[in-house]
Image 1 (cartoon, rainbow, N blue to C red):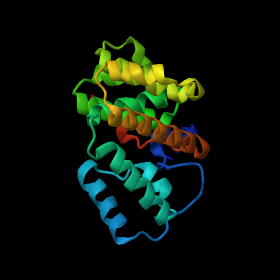
Image 2: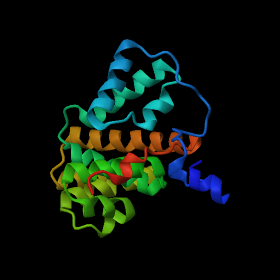
Image 3: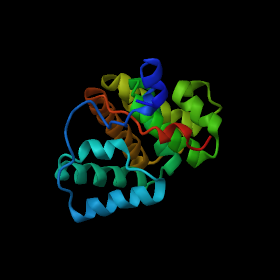
Length: 203
């Protein structure tokens, strides 16, 4: 509590309180050397360790699996650009109303696109954004896979082909969308909270 809060008897402002990664009280466990180095790299490059990593850090094996899968999907070789993959993350997270991922990946869209307005539109309602047909088809597929997965059919895959996506691209769109559906649900289950730093990035 700040000095002003003590003097007035008012509740402290949330920014005066320490940041918590999630609602579950799972302390960080012993980390392997590669994960210690990964956390140090996060501190060096962006100034903090993302709370999603802190949330997984109670179990080093789970943390390593998450990091490996994330790095492969979001940073590995793909016909999808890094921005396109982040746009899928935001589209899925918007459908699932995932506060953590909307804050974190909305910031990534702002950074990668250099367009703060696009980042905001993607978070709030991507359908009103002025997007090329390729991106609209990609996001339509990701949204449908999130909200109506049982209705996905050949016509949905063909719509992606018609916009220039190849078979591997379609796999990658599905894989990224599926990953964030899992991540969104775990974030909701644990009340995972984004680092405050995300809110001010690339604005």
